[in-house]
Amino acid sequence: WTGIIFTTAVVLLVALLMHIFILFSQAERSTPAKISPSRVTNGGVPGKQSKE
Image (cartoon, rainbow, N blue to C red; front, side, top):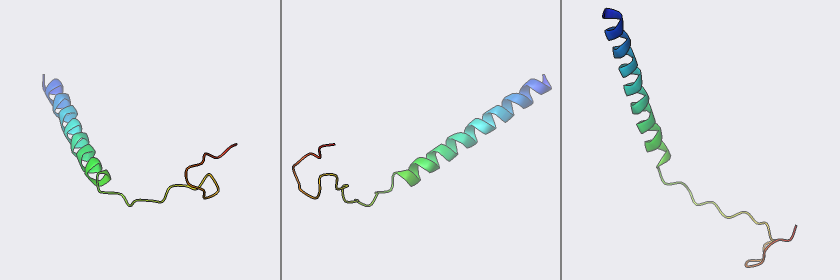
């Protein structure tokens, strides 16, 4: 029984740490991004699609 309890405790600890790390990574990613200019694919003419 000691091994089962120890293994369960380790698995729960790892799951808790993973959850915390996921929350922190989502918080960093949710910061507002800088608005980048759209890529020019039509020769700089707005409203026309590029033909390739």
